Length: 131
Image 1: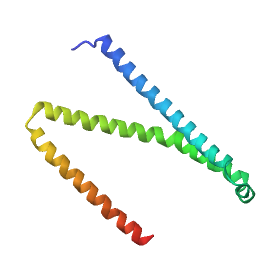
Image 2: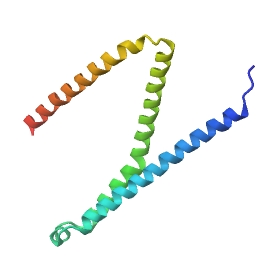
Image 3: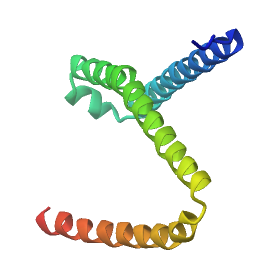
Image 4: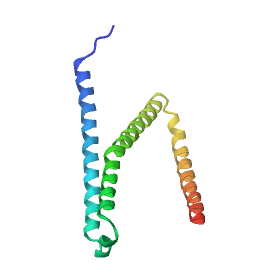
């Protein structure tokens, strides 16, 4: 049986802890930026806005948006980062083990980009048509 090196355990723990800390600080920063932007727009609103919009509706909107940032954004960001690391790790391992696959990577990347641009332009037209 193989023994586990303590430095590997410590480095893994440090990497996971620092990743979680960066994710939490990013979420707090995003929530603060959103709150500041919403408050700024409310403070620059016309007086008519405050006579038409109830205070409770504004507070609920602030609370709902901040709740969405606090609960959903970190989870989505973590999922996206894990997926990106897996994709780039897999691509690196494939490129390292079979370097000839890099010959096909450039034309396939260009083809993928062209298809994405074409698909995005097609998807805009129905949205403009139906709205």
